[in-house]
Amino acid sequence: MRAAKTRSSLISLAAAMLIGYFFTTDVARAITGGELDNDRHPAAGALFLLFEPGVFSLPDPGVPPDILPICSGSLIAADGDRGLFLTAGHCVLELGFALQALGPLGPTAVVSFSGDLHADLGVTIPVDLSALYFQLGIPGPPISIGALPDFDDIGLLVLDADSTANLPEPLALPQPGFLDSLHPNELRHSEYRTIGFGDDVTDGTPHTRVFTFGTRKIGFPRIVNMDDKYLLGQQIEASGSSGDYFGDSGGPTFWIDPVTGEEMLVAINNHPLGAVGVPPFVAHHAQYYRIDTAPAQAFIEEVLQAEGF
Image (tube, rainbow, N blue to C red; front, side):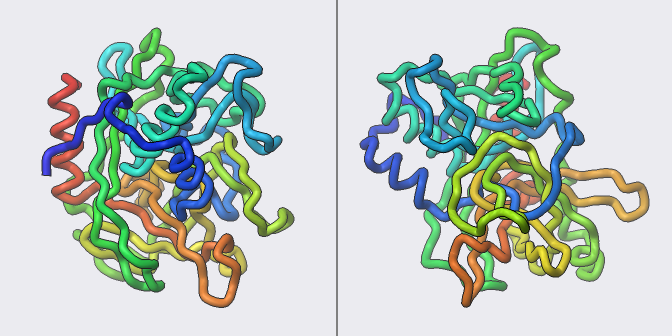
């Protein structure tokens, strides 16, 4: 399938659909457990709409004023003052919904690589709205634990920075089929790290749906299953694992080399899964869309070529 390129002017959904999608869709929006990033992953950024002061803010102190959160992501290529930002496909769609609904208020779609938007928004880099790319399948019914979906969820955005100094060092892509080359024991017993900016439901905070956004955190999922498109990770604090919740979609997931300790980007955050017998906002598992597969890498390569990276 060729990469789908869309412009915000072509996305004609009502504002009510945006509100329903943004606040109720069960897509990944944040770290469950984990720890503060402390600038260990400067290439992981936050995607959001930025408004002039006083024009629009969410009624929640967990979200910085004058922004509407969209997703997380990471820089994977740069050419001068232009960057290519990897995120989830549904994040690109959500960005279109947000622009359609709130466009009359004059927001700017931006990415910031600041690790704490509450303390400092950092340099906000505009998104080129003529260069939004995504591949996104339609999810089916809720997936049982252990099963994995069969749809794509990958997106790319072009960033227009004022200076090359405003772009971090891009992340390297994995070799094609890297995860398939691992022995099953190595796949499951390796360390993984996932990065995101959203809701905090760590121990010591209420396990309720409180919307927060803006602090980069690291989760440590335990991978328990893999198919040809997704990884399935366990994120249960009592067992020492942690991972995605609402706010992380599109953020990077890394495999850690057990010998060197080096990180390799292998997937993007996609979707938390609730556990049987607990409220749905306690997500004990999450899915990660693999980017080492041939279709994912073909999509990325097509966009790299189309945009001249």
